[in-house]
Image (cartoon, rainbow, N blue to C red; front, side):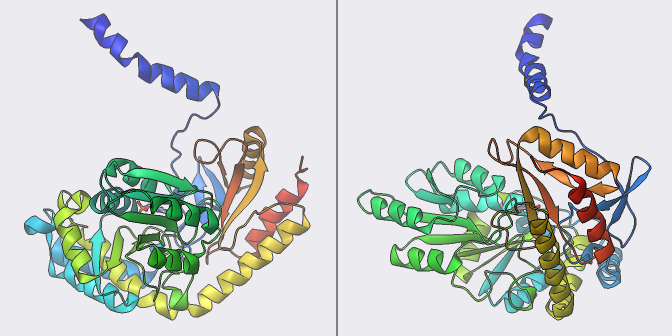
Length: 391
Ligand SMILES: *Cc1c(COP(=O)(O)O)cnc(C)c1O
């Protein structure tokens, strides 16, 4: 009995071993943030954090914290049940109404996270008779959602709208019940943007639904920081609050019917406890602050341009990045790790992104610039990067 049990579990040991052999083993590092700054204490040492997606620094904004505390004290730590049972508090509905008004979507539905939304909205929209056309560099949560839907999934070359069009033309002689085009406005590992205009026109031309994940643009890009989906005819405007909003959770901006449909058919919405009051309070305040932060955004974009220009002067390749996400394309996994370690020794925290997150040979450092970084901190990073010999 016992040896049988062990045999069944051997795969765990083997899989971990393989990861270690390939130097792809992942583990968690805990850090202590130096409150309200871009710094963290890690293993007793202060590091400048260049990996955070808290682009505007809102997670430590006094107004965000205050509103979060107010909601916490008035409503308690948990919402007690899923939205469809007894978890819908007035604050959930009010936030949805405010989001709908701000984002000019007919309706908004909150989700507990971007991951949860993607893995449970896509399967509500597509089934085994549907076709999903997805950008090759889409986030894992979108891929998981597509897989769960059991639809036919075809990936088009990254940002290649002509390739997408070919897929759409081909689909005309096939008999799918519906087609869903899935993309991201700002890609999380490349920091580049999709061709949203063409995606919209292609979706209209071929009668396909458009699902656009705006996670990394929210708060940072678009009019008043309301993202790149803002004011665009998109079936599913997906926003996540863990990044520019400095909070937690996600939303879908859509039509009234779509909202009703998702309340009835999206399992991740139906079978999960509603977002806690403290999270709602933080989002409520962030939503008021973000449209007023044009100055902060302007400064942030200026810093990003400065950083990129300097990187290019040093001979680094930042690929197609067109946002606050700045990859330094390295190629070799070993070198990416080496450089990341060298940076850490010098008090700079930059994560090396390697397979399986990106393709083989596409290893990179992924740097995010936020409102909290000073020019002198960026200079420190540039100076250590300048010492590194590009091979
Ligand atoms: C971060 C991210 C998500 C997941 O959002 P969470 O709220 O962190 O779960 C989804 N899509 C994209 C493109 C992301 O970058």
